[in-house]
Length: 182
Image 1 (cartoon, rainbow, N blue to C red):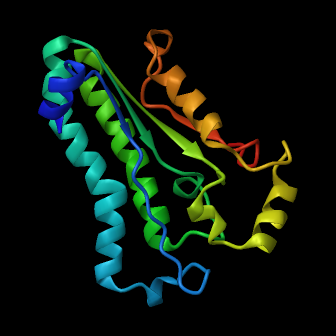
Image 2 (spheres, helix red, strand yellow):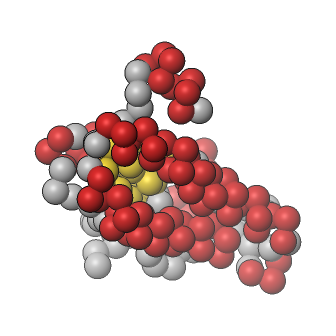
Image 3 (cartoon, rainbow, N blue to C red):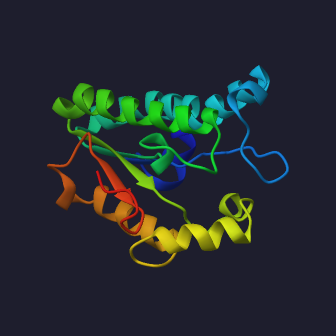
């Protein structure tokens, strides 16, 4: 992956980890006792292990260059209870926050910042699975009165990968319209 990117774009100095699945059954989350081990592992592999592997692959290049930005897309579900994501999703996204903080401390002295973004509900196919009624109820609880967009998240990413964010590391930025204020 790193070699491919370097061949076409030059040495990569920015990594955005944005993989995530949240399996549902009949449009609803599953209780812990309903989740099969194979599904648990699949969610962990896609949502968390892939982040670990991508960071591990790109960090030597960032270290060599003395500069890098890593942004992990976590979730509001990694910080608080959610009524649409299963335990496996929430655990994987909480794990990503732990990885973000620990890695930020580890690589900061080498010129690399590591941050996370914790989106609330963002207009997406995954959120659409929750159904229209759930959507309307949820929007009613968001102080800004709407779901987020990809642009909302992209703007946060744009800041965190910029030179202006050079003194920001280990941070989990909430992008959720004010729903979760902690």
